[in-house]
Length: 113
Image 1 (tube, helix red, strand yellow):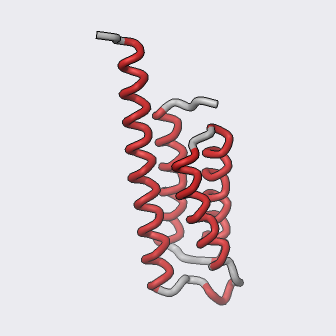
Image 2 (cartoon, rainbow, N blue to C red; image 1 turned 180 degrees about the vertical axis):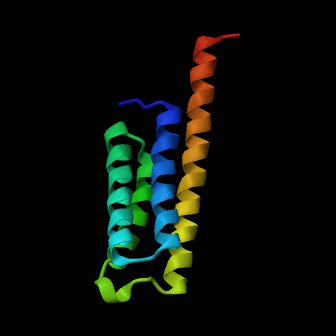
């Protein structure tokens, strides 16, 4: 299934917003929201058939699930925060690149010159 580049970027922005909320007020409940948001984005990528992004999102999901211990482990230690932040930034970068490439392909289809 196809998706618009704007829709893809919006979905990734929602994930980034959830991460920012966790960083601003780290709690187990906010981490649950983050894990659900990552899972939702991964499912969206599967549904849309975006394999390259799905792989990166799935890896992020697995890392988050490994940190999903109990309320006592939150806020996460600095090393885990840094790892998640780097993975989320890389996923956002890949998402932007994929969206830009898809927009370019769509533009070329509409303007064959």
